[in-house]
Image (cartoon, rainbow over all chains, first blue to last red; front, side):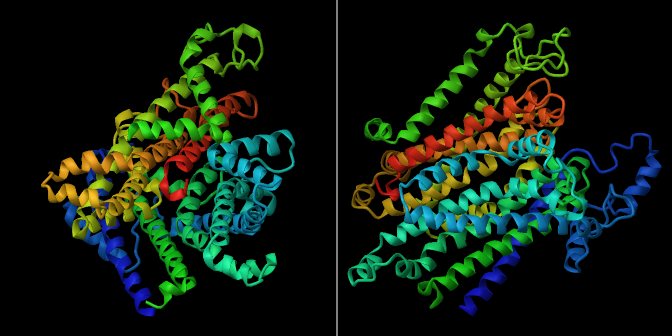
Length: 307
Length: 284
């Protein structure tokens, strides 16, 4: 298992390298540059600006410079946010995005797993039917619809909660964004837990256990819980990517100062280093979470663990 | 094969009541979008200065109200619905064709080539799709529909490729494929005549699920301002516009939001139902 884990961790390096390389050159294919909007600047000033940021060098040189900076943990200066480095910008936004995403994931798991187990144990009951309708609706509802509608109803009409803002993550401000982000995740958690448990409950060894007299629901649940939750564990990796995407929208809808906006803003402004920084950081987060989910899955499944 | 797919859908889907209701809702939405111009005297871009930001009602024939420029909300929402449907269907079709070919070739070839092809899919799968989509969408000038389609297709084909590859791997070892190979049938013909018809069921089911996914991706980009541009509108750009004015004119948000939700809900439920009927792995 340790060797397997180590091999998988080393395997991340080429993937990341490919990602950085592909992203670096694809971004440069786009027409325009970071200093395009400043129409009034003299050609000489522009040349000086480009020289100062190293943009006058051949693309391959720039690429090598970027990668060597990256290896030293330097994400470079931002082209648009003068006087700030990409690391400083991300350090301001990432904790906010992370808090938002983590709160949504925890909320989804805390409510989703018990609900999924309950619906599986009371299959075709009233709660099961209701939950299956609600999860279908929650999955169909994109964050950019749910967010504004929640803000309209609870923020502007009922005035129970603020419709936008963050205020350092104060609970009143966090409720609507976290619910918006958590809703589709919660729906997936319910579905995965439900089908996971149903599948295990129908398997031979559970039927054998039942035949031997282990009839009570509680005993069955003790034997089934671990295998039943495995599909959910392997989904948690992709779930992080899903939450990162969702937080992009939620931050826009509720005006939250997270890191998500840097991706769109950076891409539109041709702020090359900012976009690259976002891709590197979010890429590492997703790849590591995917790997962690895979390893967790292997650890939970003794058939994989032994190899 | 096509006949048997139709037959199983025809006999089993009606028993799936939720999927049947979803199918009816979907057809109703399509008909509404298509015949909307007959239902309202207003053109989607026409400006009615006598009725600016009018709430829903009978004033000026704007049942769903009008926006800040005096444009009819019903006519604009229906235009957005048509654009979203069109983009969703075209993107899903292209995605499914690419994914099927990629998956069938990777599964049938196997070995190194197959492994490399699927590793590529895995890498794209592991990344948040926004990277790809946003970068592609910003590569060219905004509102370029072919680029928009390319951006959402670039992530849309992945699931189909995985499913088709899994099915093809299993089929490859079956006797009738080996027999065809032994008789010297060319690979392309085996893929076309033997593999493709056998993966058609799950592919159709997942294609139905790809359409709402593509509609949502497009709406997501339009919401961020990277998708279709004025005067053209999709449901996503209308939601984005409506969210800005929701304090004074909530109907601008609620009309496209409701249409988008009903549309994706109908397609998701229909796709789930078709998958239950057509995908052998879900055990029917």
